[in-house]
Length: 269
Image 1 (cartoon, helix red, strand yellow):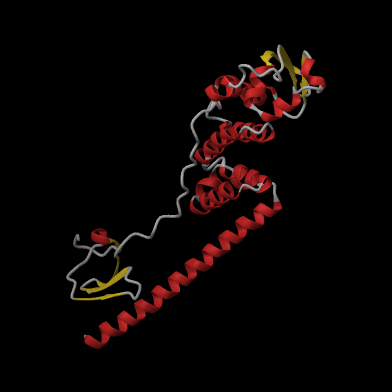
Image 2: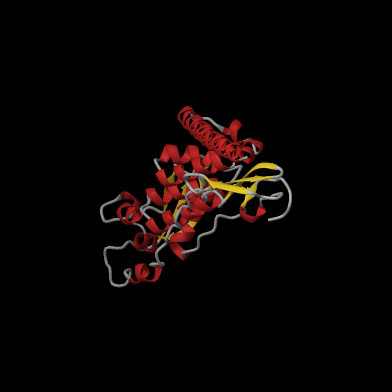
């Protein structure tokens, strides 16, 4: 290492005439007696936080799905126009047959004996135009596009809810993948609350870990002010207290080891 008096990891530590060494019981820290006093040298950097395996999205089934429309007399014919949201915005002339081939919920909706089978218009009141348009686009073309980076996480949440509602598992995985990639300072807290509401343990754990590891960045982005769910707030407070307790324990253990080494060095002097 370089001559000096700075603690560090591996050869980043600086020493000045080292004369005696001792290693901590866990093998992580080297204590070195030198002309500049007692130095601590971390043998290795602390382990990284747990990583989250990437979500695996299966291959597209659109060709196989559409192939099933041939020769199936139970499938409806004609087009449907959707009236979406409170303002009943229109998505016009969508093939009922293709929707049925791609979603079991649409298959039931437009099935034999259902009033929607022959309806020219169907009202969809539980979502917004952009989200439902994205669902229809995916069903007809397999295109998955959340648009601009700003607001991407919220659009993924909205589309994922529709994918669950209309039983489109591959689209649900694509949304989950996008959410996993969207966790950042500004989005971690809203996604954490959404994961808590949806019961998504994977996304919940990832967001909690991110907030714990990037607390300053999350706070600077306004993440604390975004908190609305008391349960989530309690969970984050618990995480913070656990980290403080763990840090205090680590510092106390290091202090004990440091005192032992100092005593040994004093005895040998």
